[in-house]
Image (cartoon, rainbow, N blue to C red; front, side, top):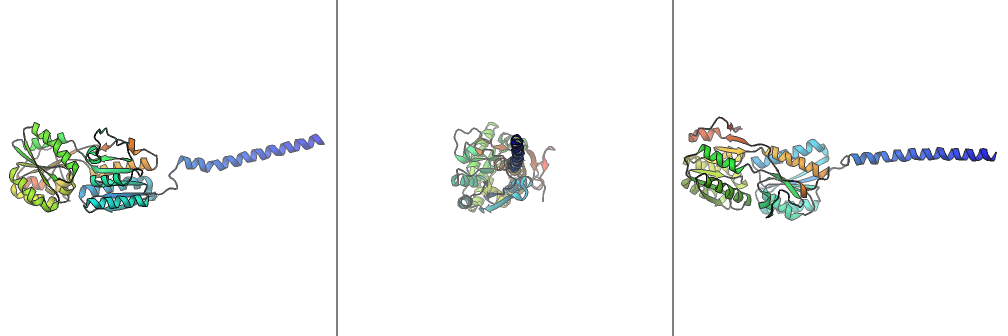
Length: 334
């Protein structure tokens, strides 16, 4: 009888043990599932600081939002702010994002990036529509990564190919005026690079700088009077004021090579351009890697546009009587 009782107790203990194991296994399943998809129940808040409204920056912001929305759906909330061209406002916006403890900041244009970098060293920051990150962030020994909480995408099209485009279209020109805003360090960087390239091709180059839109007309009038061709780098103040430049240069018969499509559509003859929408989209993909997969901005290389297109402004080219080679694509007039 005693042996039978002991056997029954042992059997009962085995049943309880197996039941406990089954319960423990069931309890682990949700945790394992959560580990497999860490973003399942999280909603991300992303602050967007855009320097100013113009075609290129608007397209980059749209591409960024589209990329993240496609990947995260309603799990991402955008706090989108526009500084209306005022650099100090970028700092105010960036500090607001930091106070709100957003999950990531997207800074659209160089002053927005600089403001975000100053505002936080912990929240991930991604720039877009930024020409040269070494110049923008004051990094002398630039290696392609920042080593900080900042990464992003660059809108720099190959300046050697832009110089070659100018030479292809205007081989008999002698004087090239380079027009840009003195407050934009990336514009100055582009000027210094393309000046050397154009000088090597036999052109004489001169910088024409303005501080803001108030003195633009005076400066562009001087540039048009002294130049055979004008080159416009990717400059936000220029992009926001192409009508002023067009109204001076077209009547003067002075053609413009532009650094990007939006500027060319407003006042240029031709450009070697990128898609700012694609650039913003790539930035959105980088944001997803940071937010969901834990990528570190410090080690993420700055990305560039995957392709460049020779484009021309058909209306201005016709008005100035300039013949455009067949491998150029007309910019959509809409």
